[in-house]
Image (tube, rainbow, N blue to C red; front, side, top):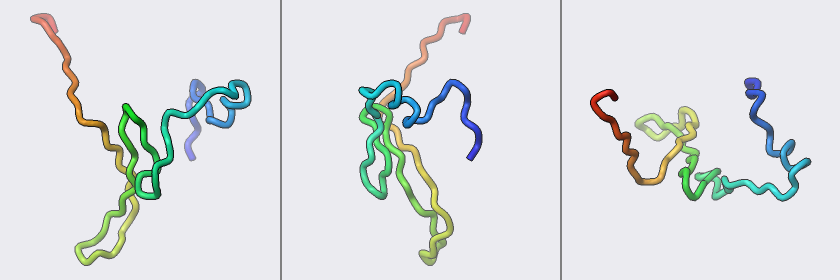
Length: 76
């Protein structure tokens, strides 16, 4: 596993000093291991060959339906 950036902490580290902290991401199911009300979900899919033979697993991040608007003017 790659080394994590210094500004990030593992959940287990945070709850030791902040026992009231709760995760926003929740376990949902084996096919959707993580889900967040506002940020979407991480699906656990398997890429298969045309005959259905599993080739490799692929986590997929899906986001809720929505739009992002970036307002600009003549000067960008």
